[in-house]
Amino acid sequence: MEEIEKNYKEEYLALKKEYEEFVYIVSHDLKSPMRAITNISNWIEEDLAENTNKEIWDNFDLMKNRVSRLEMMMNALLELSRVNRFDMEVYEINIPKMINECIEMAKNSSQVEFHFLYTIENENLNTLGKKLQKVISKLLDNAIQFHDKVKKNIFIEINETVADYEFIIRDDGPGIPDEVKDKIYNIFYTVSSKDILDTTGAGLTISNKIIRSVGGKIVYSPALDTGSIFKFNWPKIITV
Image (cartoon, rainbow, N blue to C red):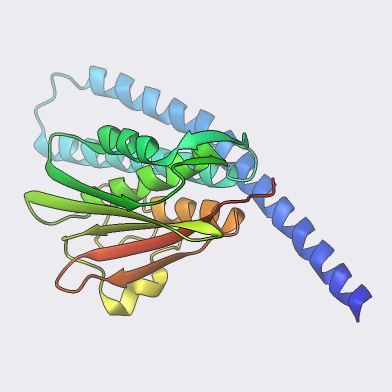
């Protein structure tokens, strides 16, 4: 029985590696023809500069939008395939300082107010710093991007246990409908149409894969009044 389980595990790991290599190759190799299409589109646009037919320009803008979206999706696939390949350096970080840096990077022209609270005894941690920073940044971007109000509130909380740190990111946005909450970690899935909100829908997928790769888990729950809560744990000890 143990031998059979071992063989299944080895086969699973081999298939997983093969899949990740396939995704990497496909997403990487498709970038070149996508850039060529973008360049050709720009040349055609220059040639049509004096054309005043609105229908032609509407169709042309639609084509450029779809090409741009496809290129962003290829970049997201490439980033997803690199989770277990890149940024594997373990080094010491100051957790509150890193969170504040993520907040600064997430600030934009939108009216966003961040509320940061932490109750941790050990502020410094030897970990995969770039990966933790990427997860936090993507969750903050997600909370801002899918918010439906002019004034947005984002709440960040950190708690510490013996074995790990617990990160909680909450917003007062529209929340996620109960009937689709199981789909939010699927690659390219978005609650809103991509024609309404121009996004790849890959941020949660990448975050989920990073968190699982270090032995953690991310959980979504609706906020009490309105909004979303994403809670994940990050182990203090990570085996690379």
